[in-house]
Image (cartoon, rainbow, N blue to C red; front, top):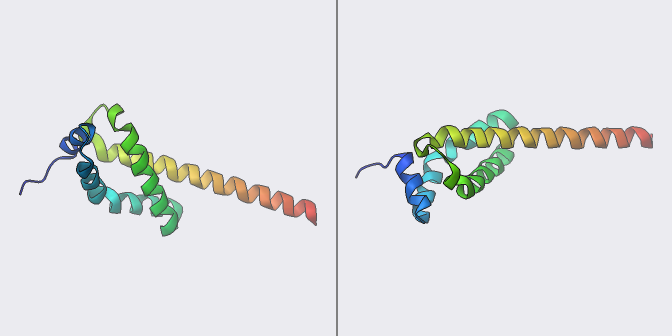
Length: 104
């Protein structure tokens, strides 16, 4: 059995083959979760970020200029989402601390 390249899987997804997208998820999920976990320090948050990265990837695959560059692209999407989550959590904590300081 021949292993398909990422580029070929992307082309199949663009043609409407959902099984090809599942192959992409199966191939890269662990790497994206590990990347997000390293950034976030939380496996649960990392799994959420990886899932969101795949959702965004599915809808934006038609815009991917180089299908063979799928993994670097997925990594950038994952890193951006992890950074966004980190920013939002910090911002929320700052607001909570500020509110708590006003209350005392």
